[in-house]
Length: 141
Image (cartoon, rainbow, N blue to C red):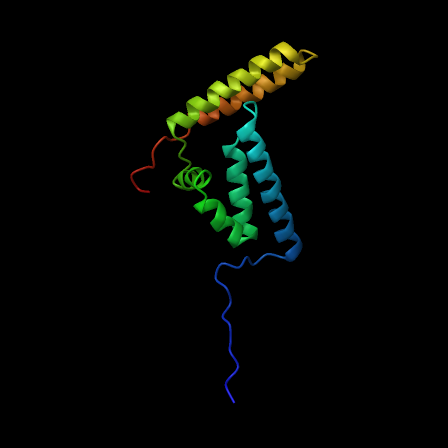
């Protein structure tokens, strides 16, 4: 007769209540869908949704988190962000150009006047925040 096998606790298993894990997993899923939409539409961002998806997945699903981090398109942005909030200059320029195009489109098409004004205001705030992010990891990273 053999001894019963004891499986150790998984180190990467989240220690959260099940409803909270499901909520975070839903947030990760919705953010991932929005990131995909953002990759297709120039007026919507991609990387912020990828980062939210990675954060929520890290809290709720280690398997999804590993998949996101190892994904060839999404993984680099996640790893760079985790290196001190790094956003490369190419990403900053691309984001600024696409937001400018989206803001111009909103100004021409959207009515009443305060809708495009609000959209452009948010884009300006995001742009300022984005350009204040570091472009390379700090020396201590």
